[in-house]
Image (cartoon, rainbow over all chains, first blue to last red; front, side, top):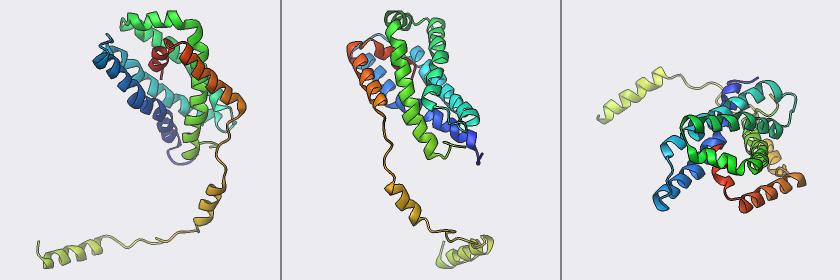
Length: 141
Length: 73
């Protein structure tokens, strides 16, 4: 392994959800709340996507680079597995933070959201995280 | 600081900072640039196009998915 390989892997992992949060999620929340006056407790909702999701992506990529990159395990499928950790965690956070709206969403779109989430994670990990790993020289370490 | 002061500072800095050794390139980087330019862009298999289309269709058909997806990204 090269210099600071795992640090680079962590940074490559957190990059995608961090940028997504800044460019898509935050403006979306602000738009819903300030423009459409949709009642969202942003301060509580944002905790999970801001603090937990990017860090888990980072650590997940560290594990990939440390153990699976050499074996050329498909990163898309590996990224998919993360959703089986994040989805229950997200639901748990929603319960702890008493986000009735989030819980309601989980139950109302439950059967559809899992395959869609798996597809989204597969594509995001394969093309975005995979690209960042390759650019940082982590593809075959 | 007057000119003398600037010159004195310049001399001292030069005295303290050693000149760089082996500052030149160890090899010609231009062939690597050409090789990179010749490389074709990443090819997306048809299966992934289908997934992308399915993802777009799902979001259009079930817009209520969006908050749940945004929450986990």
